[in-house]
Length: 360
Image 1 (cartoon, rainbow, N blue to C red):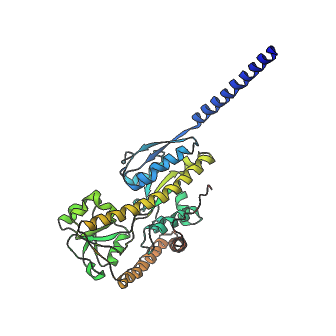
Image 2 (cartoon, rainbow, N blue to C red):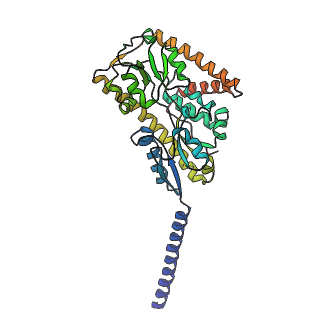
C-alpha cells in the first residue's frame, strides 16, 4: 500500500510538472506572438478623439487578451496631419489619425462626407462606416490607400460667430467676412451670403481682434483652445452648418492583414465601441460649452424656418455641383453622392446603431 501510494504520488507529481510546463510554454508562446502596434495622432490628450476615442480603444483591445499592445506617438511626433496616410503606407505608423479634409488629393471621393448635408453628426458617421464597409467608390478608395477604418466620428454642427455683428436672420449674414476652413466650405459660407477668408486656425483670434474678419464658424467646443470667448459676442444657435466629417483612425492594410482573425476582430469591435463613445463625447462637449458661454453673456440667435429652408436648397446645389466636378475628373461623383445620400437617409431611422463589424 505504501509503495503503491508512493508510486501514485510520483505519477501525480510528474503530471503536475507536465501541466505546469504546458502552461509556461503556452504563456511564453503567447508572449512571443504579442505584437506592438505604433499609434500616431497630432491632437491633445483632452480631445474627445483621444480621451474617448483612441485611448479607451487601446485598453479594450489589450483587455481582449489577443496578443496586441500599443506604442503611442502623440502630439504630431511622426509628422503633420497631411502626412498621416503616407505614414501608414510607408510603415512609420500602424494606426493613425486620418482627417478626411486634410487628404483631398489622396481621397477625393471620400470628401462626400464634408458636403453640406441636412442631417447631423450621427447620421454622417453612420453613413461613412457603412460606405467604407460596402462595395462602392468610397470602399475602393480606402482599399487603394491601403487602409482599414477602425474609428469614425463627425464634428458637432458649426454655427456662425461674430464679435460685433448681431445675427438674427439670414439677411444679417450678408457681406460679413468669415474665416473659412477652405475647400467646399467656401461655398457653404457663400450660400449664407458671407465672404469666406482663408486664415490658418491658430491665427483666428488675431484676425478677429484686428478686424481682418468679422467672425468665424466653429463648434463651441473649439472656442477655449483659441480663446474665442474673449472676443466673440454673437452666435447663431440653430443654423447647424455642416462640420468636418471623416474624423477617423485607420490601420494600414499591410499591418491588419498580418494579424490573426482574433486580433482583427478585437480591433474592429473596439473601433465600433470607440466610434460611439467618441461621437457622443464630441456632441456633449459642444452642448456643455454653449451652455457655459450663454451663462457668461453670449448672445444667441435662432433663424426663422424660411431661412433654414433657403439654405437647404442651396446645399442641394452645392452637392450636385460637387458630383459633376468629380465626374468630370473621371471619378464616380454622382454614384457616390447618390449612394451616400441613401445611406444618410437609412441611418436617420436609428443613427447610433452603427453597422456590424465585418472581417472581410
